Image (cartoon, rainbow, N blue to C red; front, side, top):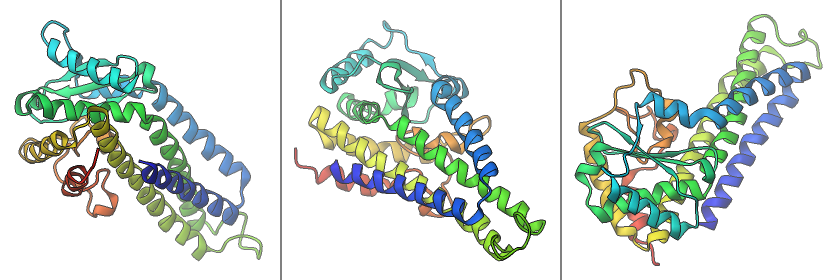
Length: 285
């Protein structure tokens, strides 16, 4: 767990380093300030209201306590083990087996599961999945993801500015103190790619950490490992269509929900399922 936490800190530091590097290269404090305010504004809205937006996007409804009494009992058991407030529990009507957690902090957390996952997992496997999602809540991954998205968003804004600057002769003219067109083009192309890679690496690191946290909460890594095997097979047959949904929400789910993945594993929001299963089965509690 400590290793994954350190990795996250180092990756966030790398994102910040890229931001400072390109800021120093370009100069232009006014442009940087506008970009920062813009990205912070978007992520402020995302942080406070993203859970409502995501639940609306996927048509999730709050689970009826009588109909889903066993689901509530399982979540209640895990939240007591984690010493967390009881989250709201939502159901997403989909044959795909998946689950996600959202909410800005443990007090305002939401755990959502699909009808598909309730059909294919046994009690212990579902408990492993729910413990994983409560692990995200306990580790405050929504906050970490927001910070990463803020920095990456600023970098993307600066890169866009650099592309326009390169087209029109650079920032502040082509003088000896300012960046030349080649530098701007390199900045415009390389910086956002690096930021995306690091942001995705943070997401993968948090998935590993949630796996570990959840397994320790219920003292059972094997049920989650088995659940992940079933979920991967199910998702391949029942991918969500990206009509009305977006790749930007993929990192929320326990398994990438859309058909296909990024062109390169480097850009995937989730670690390889086989590696997650290997780590879980190697855990010693």
